[in-house]
Length: 360
Image 1 (cartoon, rainbow, N blue to C red):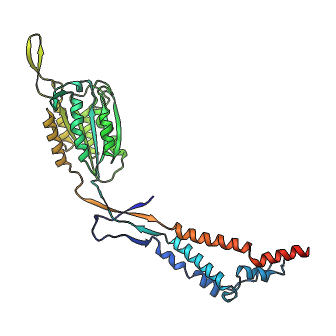
Image 2 (cartoon, rainbow, N blue to C red; image 1 turned 90 degrees about the vertical axis):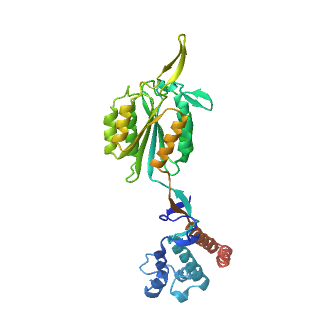
Image 3 (cartoon, rainbow, N blue to C red; image 1 turned 120 degrees about the horizontal axis):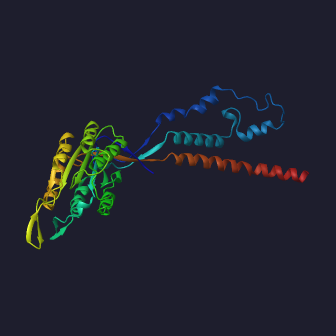
């Protein structure tokens, strides 16, 4: 697999072209090593200090090209030189650097925490001429928002009485959208654990181990904290200490008309929405509180969030780097194997073997 090499803030077209290079060019300094060895190191006789003296040692020396530079056959020296050059070239790691690839990056980790409590079933949002529940409206508007978050790592938290990390931080926005679409009301229980949702967001962003960059949580709920082990304001204070910014969105209309036996009356479906706590959470972490009363208001909120937390505006240049050290290494191996095979079936050896068999 090709690797990616970062080139600072270069983008495609800034004078960067395809090229070849050696990752370790200093390895080429090894090329003259065999010459120095042959030139300055005296070879020892093959039968020196041998336990068994072989009268045909000269033949072995001739077959292997032993001795000084002038005593070996030229073609054998040429092959040995080629093998050595190929091995050193492989050690120098030849690489091909491709065309620059522009990757938008922001360094931001963004989590969305979506309320799935029972109150999200309230049908007080009108979408395409039909009344839909709050979760359906949230999905419809959040889809476009997620699509625009190019360069951000996005994660998804679903919470009710329980809290779940549905999607870890990822650049795969399509997966985040799919898992959000598959969420259903009541999946995490019918109550609302806002504090636990913030606590899970803190843990998720802490586990991401980013030293730099912005950590953002967008919390969407239509109620008050009615469950969980962590108080929302304590969780928000811990989030502030960890450098996390929280934007809170209160979901629900202010008034809807309800028909009854006594006629039509107006009710407030968002009476349980704890706007004071949500505002305190947002202000304490450097974020902001928004109120989504209808689809148009929802869309405006996300547009404001795009301005407060802009998506990628610059691009970090990367160039794919493909290693090619295996080609010269394979060439050297093939030459050695061919040489070894040729040494086994040389005409001289075949003739000698036939003569020995005939003499026997």
